[in-house]
Length: 472
Image (cartoon, rainbow, N blue to C red):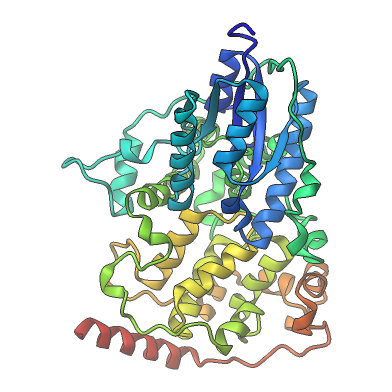
């Protein structure tokens, strides 16, 4: 085979798109390309909802590749061995992929690169998941940022690479290797009956993601600064779901928001800051990988949080008697996502009012969110718990009642997701009973529960524990 006929493998993970895809662009520039997805043990360890949503994304991207005259090769096994096998079967001389930065992915990818180089194969990782690589943003003393605001100021001064266009064509190899079907992987099986409910709300694939961005820029970004916290309004972009699986490039979103700011749309600056917040989470997970499973601040390792408990189970089922908390949990089971303002609220309630370890909530979100992101999830939970990076000197405890009055003043959000609340019989609220496990024995006829914790007493208990811990 000539150099142009020698194929490259494109190892796909969280980059299921054609546009703004540096790894794909590099592979196409070298000749024939074999797109590959590997269900390895690391990916198989994802929660039920992320695995199901990944399956949807793969199905969509497979069709996108087919429309381009290409294919998606699907394999199962340890990534290093599968890629070695494919190299031997296809004669590929290079493997390209987009970088990931969580500790599990970094360990796997390092092993893959070493294994391929032992074979004399070019193993090339590329940017594309973030605005900037985590090691390229440094403080004036050469360290990494531990506080968001100075990180934002540093990022705002940097030029972000323009998004790459989608390739006009993807050259095919002379021969295609064997492939499993996506359905053979069983990625969605653990969602069980909840899959059909969540599917009504998921917006899947590159074309849909671009449409979602366009709609937000046309109708949502102007009022974003104030509307993003209102749970009763569609004030957010909803793009976290698509960014999670790389169905849209973060640089494309950034430059679109920059244009909106240049056009004078007031909410664009706030939206840009939220994109940088996402990068900041990955910046931290790269430099301090313990944030995924240990308190980021060492002094919080000994804080007397409870392990999993009966109160946490009521929290999981949306039966705390706090309507904003329960509405958020139920929204997650119905739509696969949760409003960001409510994520902070339910996390505060679990870790403060119920004095339960943030890891309990973090693991549950990992199981249930279709937009689960290891960096944002870890940083978000630790921010709410008080154990993470945060410049605030006080012990933050959200009050569900005052949050509801401010961000759901007409009870629209609560009525939408809690059947029976205020007499609600709304269609979305009733879908809960089609989605949750049958073992929960929840029915629309169940009365809404009484409050399980007095808010004032719960706050005082948390503050007392904080003061004792601080003194110790």
